[in-house]
Image 1 (cartoon, helix red, strand yellow):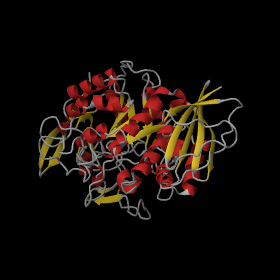
Image 2: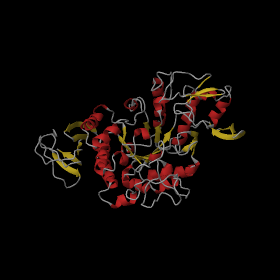
Image 3: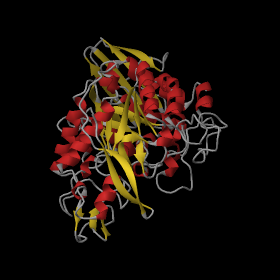
Image 4: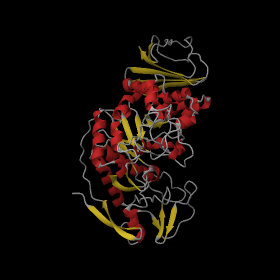
Length: 518
């Protein structure tokens, strides 16, 4: 039986009793209904607040998201990453958690969550959620208790010093916040105090909270900010060995459940965190910028993209952009609406190794919302129709400025749209195992043409991308003598010859995929 603890928390000058579940959660693996290897398909990253409103309050919710699962299945998605859905102090941002075992009330009930999981699984789609290990909200009842007195039993759940330490600088700020009862450490600012993960009680709290969701049939987690779990001193605060060991322990817990997936946000040394000895998968920060530059035709970036997976683990999670502005603006804005370049960027990461993550609205060319601070331009309501379609009420935020032309309905009707291009790329990934899970071989760049091969067992695929504004000579393919090239995208294209040179030119700003037949 799970214990619920009532904490007296100061609110508006008075004390209120807040129920916080700190009890143990035994592991009860419900198994998995997903096909083996589901995690090698493409994921979509969804901001629930911004996806679909079902109850007319202008805010997206789980029932609305469930109603859009057919759209995601048709797109070719195999996994969904939900940005924070747990109760939070800021709601919109979502990363200031106030209860690690409760849903944000505006998103719905646990029954809604369970139904969403069931319906996703019926369509062969796995679901992972954001889990914020490093910190809580300052409004979390445990921190509020710790803030009241150094004698609080929860004081050591967070990181405190009697006096504010000097010499610290994290992203231009001192991470220590002074209070009348001492100074606390907060990597991401005063509203999100860091947990003391050297405290075994804190680790147990997270372990039991992770089990809470896994026991409900959740398929895994995106672990937030894992290089920051333990900061040892002002100089060596980032990506300490203790953080890597903790990340590994959480990975082992999660993957102790059958067919679960873990991906980590590790802006420091992401390739290290993608190693099975740490997280097993991590976002390939930095690659996204090179892909955008390559899509513009920059030769050095094209070479950098071709070289990346010569050394990077194939378990990297790739992307073009995400919910954080530090990773870049919406792709439409970065490429100034150049749809040819947009398609080249999409093909680059959807056909290469790694597990691709598509940010919601990316597949229809949603633009960011101008004039808003911080990450808000990236987190607008999904453009379903020219006249909205997100909510029957006024949305929590204004629509994308290009919603009239770049919405899901209009894009679905246009055979040459971004949406249909994404569907074609994901169809390749879902029907050619070599694209989803194969090795990465013979990657090369000639001029502005990149080519590489993917191999899984006896199946081989060849990918050729011309980033240039002019047609280019056929690159050296170095294929086995007598090999035949069957065009799988676009169908009906002329065949490439299997010798060194002499084939037809590669069209400007084009993508071609072949199955290599012996």
